[in-house]
Image 1 (tube, helix red, strand yellow):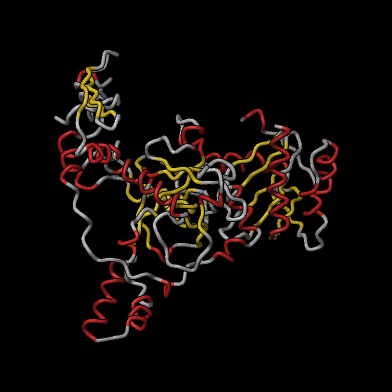
Image 2: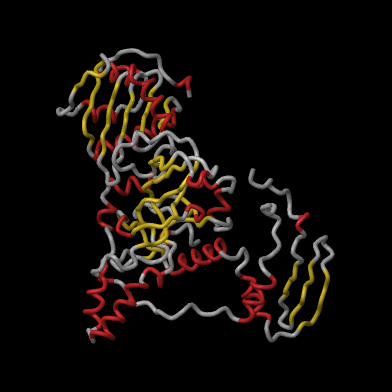
Length: 191
Length: 262
């Protein structure tokens, strides 16, 4: 993992985009980011960066970003809330914050942030990247909002009777013969 | 095959109430011991991401259980609670309203359904990718052959990934925390799911009882002792079927033992 940390270098958003394209990466996500007129440029740690709320369309790009980059094996992505995509040796980090119902923030920061963000992320790292890609796509399409919750009025009256007693044969089978033999190792009894 | 075809695995979408086998989006929790750093997540965790929070540093009563942390993640989960339990308090309330207040059935149902405190809790088990069910192979998992897991059919339309329900991570959930319903299992899938639950929670071989029931009333035509190295007795029954009895393994033949608690 250490080897994937790019050299630290300040880079403007425009420079990052240029370098990004020069390296032959899929530039659609960055196009989606850079083409937006509402992009806010902020100064973070003395370097230029972009910080903006990200909409669902851009989030879809982020997913594609992940997939296409994975094929090249030149980047890695971890986590889902902070899905950090690091393009080595390009100095771009995309932080995608997947909210439960498809609202996203994407943050593009430059190189001087990479090491620090990565360290923080490793410390909190719990889950692998995008554990449920099909679910995420369904959410982005609004599928889950459509599915919604069941109507509580549609509850059924269930039988309140006690569960059926085991037949005598089952009692014999489960009570005396027990489970089939198992090759599983057994723990010792507690002292 | 049931686990490959969304049309077989899932029932049509419905507004009917939750039932066993529903796939919903909801939080699941695991209590862990260890020195996990507090999660840096702010606010709600994202889907699939664990929010790790320390609960206490020292175990109560001076025990050496260590630090307790909760690991919570919002993820797809399967409802494992049986339908009867999901509606237990509701059904009793309806019966009570009808018997004591002479209320018509539909009015009683509507009134009882509006009480969110009834049947508040249910059990759910999270869906995990195949890789987290290692060392089991994806093929074995997909065919429902691995104890403790139940395969979930991938369906782009519903948003279900190729996963397994991890029964070991079952947790208790307030149903008001369910974010959305993702899918409803078909009758066939629910039957298979219940079999997996029985196999995991109670018996490794629940079919043993059915085999014995089938054997009742049949004549034993032949008895043979196995010569394949296992101590087994095969009974050939009058309908040609065979019933095999195996000797339970001795403790010292059951494999390596783990050491006890330190």
